[in-house]
Length: 115
Image 1 (spheres, rainbow, N blue to C red):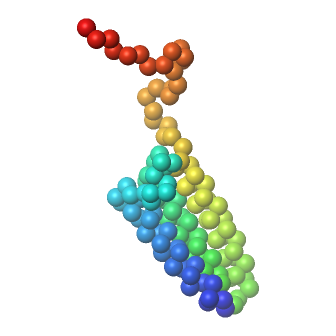
Image 2 (cartoon, rainbow, N blue to C red; image 1 turned 30 degrees about the vertical axis):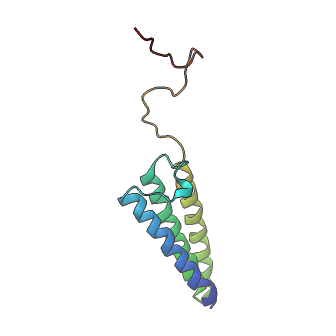
Image 3 (cartoon, rainbow, N blue to C red; image 1 turned 90 degrees about the vertical axis):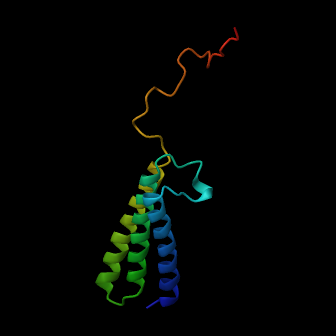
């Protein structure tokens, strides 16, 4: 049992879970990610998936049964990758935009002339 690794991992997982819950319920994103995140709730769900994966990895470290350790590593790693993909998907713009997002004529926005 590697409790010296499992305990800090659980603490980090709790911090990530708190950020995920804050993003899903309140729309809060940490300051270092505010510019990149486009879909806050998806970001929060990704953080929650990451927290579950970290807890699974910590549970795997706390057991001595080799079958549980290997299954914990497999599922924990899969959830970790899924959480990273979901979190990264929140950085992209959503699919419900009104226009194409680009100016087709290349002229840019026009100014209003004064009367």
